[in-house]
Image 1 (tube, rainbow, N blue to C red):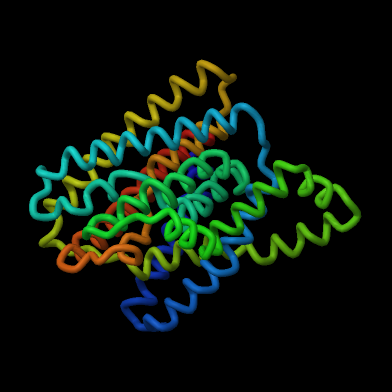
Image 2 (cartoon, one colour):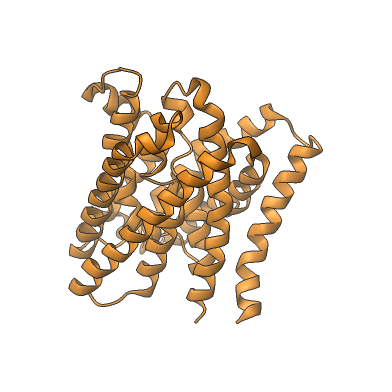
Length: 308
């Protein structure tokens, strides 16, 4: 069992370590990192999401998981607003660090390493992604008194290549078109092309995580409090999700692993993109960095559970 755990965990740690070395030795600079992000976010992840949602199953269980995840994150962000006074003077972004998750840049990569296929994570990521681009992003836009216009939210959604990849994948999967393509004579060719594009995603995402690790020691007290609050809320969501879903449907270990990873993930990395973080910027980035390290530690536990 120890060797099985190491087979999945050690590559994660090695790639994060390589990312740290790339930063310290300036093997590539911030411009190189931006280029790496552009190719991952603009090409590889959209294709990964398209394939995951195209090959996902669409049934009553998927609808139930969507509702459980969506409503759960709604509860989490509501709790975040109530707990803002606990994090003065950093409470402004607390609700957004306690809800939603970085599924695209981290969730699929880790799930693929455990299960061998990224498609299963799409089942839990659907509710998370829709929540992130509606409720979460709408409230984030309003932090500085801005107005979350429906038109603006739609523009943000459909100008995001990852969201487009997911949407097209859902359409192809739900209509059966994806199945027709994959089962046709051209299916092997399509799989090979998609496989070539998506194969490096896990390694490159983890390398980026290592490169961007930012541990500000002076911010550790509020950051630690933020992460502990998120872990407590996510633990309750995981327990609630299990009680609801597996009382309705038969136990599914891969779904359980997907839920465990979903609730272990940090908040979305896009907070600084859609909000003016100003003096809270270092608190936000340090919280995301430290929670990414925590996610890797929790990943070890998920892997141990998966090989039982």
